[in-house]
Structure formats: structure tokens, C-alpha cells
Image (cartoon, rainbow, N blue to C red; front, side):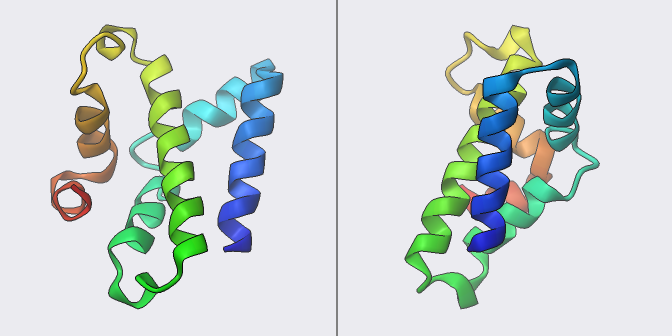
Length: 101
């Protein structure tokens, strides 16, 4: 849980500061090749973590933030109500996205 909470704090600081370096880092965690997002989703679908409520809450918050940030980098999807699902599927891959949804 501490790793996820530290990631949350780092994301929140980057969003608050929003310097050039922060934007580059935020863009990198939204990149499909970055494994961070997929690892967060795996925590949510992995049966051995089902009983860890705080971990799952922190993980869901991190996923939510990353999806919101990803939407900022794709202006065409901002107005589409299904864009979160589209971005999730793009970043996670179809198989993992289905498990999460």
C-alpha cells in the first residue's frame, strides 16, 4: 500500500506543480509502454489482494488520476463520456481492461 500511496502523492505533486518536467513525467506514466498503470490494474484483479481494502482504494484512486491525466493529453476524447473506457483499454490492453471492467 505504501508504494501506491507514494505514487499517488507523486502524481498529485506533479499535477499541482505542473512544471515542464512534471508534464513530461505525467505523460510518461500515461504512455502505453509504461507498466505502472497495468501493474495497478493487476492489483485490482488479483484475487490475493481482494481483502486489502485500503490497498484497493488507493489503487483505484491512482488509476482514476492516471486516466484523468491521460484524457488531458488527448483533447479529442475529453467530451466523449466513454473516453475513460477507451483510454483504459488502450493503456491496459484489451484482455486486462476486460478483467477490470
